[in-house]
Length: 309
Image (cartoon, rainbow, N blue to C red):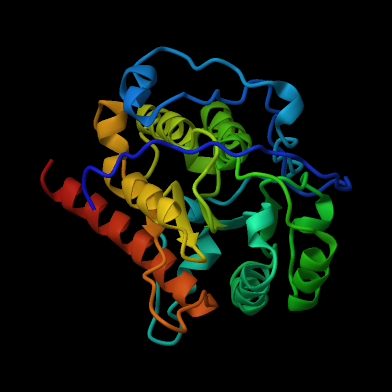
């Protein structure tokens, strides 16, 4: 999986509308999403530059901006999470906020859309049993809606997927930036010790049409500067479908991010490319096992670092 840094294809991105309403958590509004570099081969020099060039503001979906809790988040959310027990393999979910970012580009229509919906219908009750706030479901092109936040039932998942029509491009980087930038800003303002850790699960079928690496690298650098816990942010990419470009790009994200950045970075990204097996499909159990494995690996790495200090 090394040295897979192919040219990133570009697709045209369009956005569709959505509703608004308030919720129990808040992050600031995004003013400066990242620009798209022309070639993967030029990424390394660009990331070493002090700041990216802003995108056209008219093309980006609104930033992820729930309303802030009145009471501070308890410190248990930041201490090393108990990842599993004999009776509950997914106990770790109680220590994290869980956000699903769904690719709603045109190529997701049909069986891929149904597969993703069914996986989320199954996973929602598991998450709710550990966190009464439920999950947030965001889309690449469809603007954020309060109706998509704090989802607690499979029925609501069905209604959400029925209301969103897959169309447009795959501007994954722009959407990631609109989620990660305000989250990191909150960590900077309040301190990571009082901001609940985040698991961001991205489900996509295609190669991004914009720069995904820049917001990931920026987030990792800032969390490292804050000395945030290794598990503060975890991002898992899952591929549905057989797109070879998407598979290669996901492998590169997993293996080459620090090389692209030109500096040592925390490991906060995991990818699950489609393996091409007959009958292979996305499942709730498969998603949660990958997320659990990522959390455990970061905890183990932190313990190892502590032992060798």
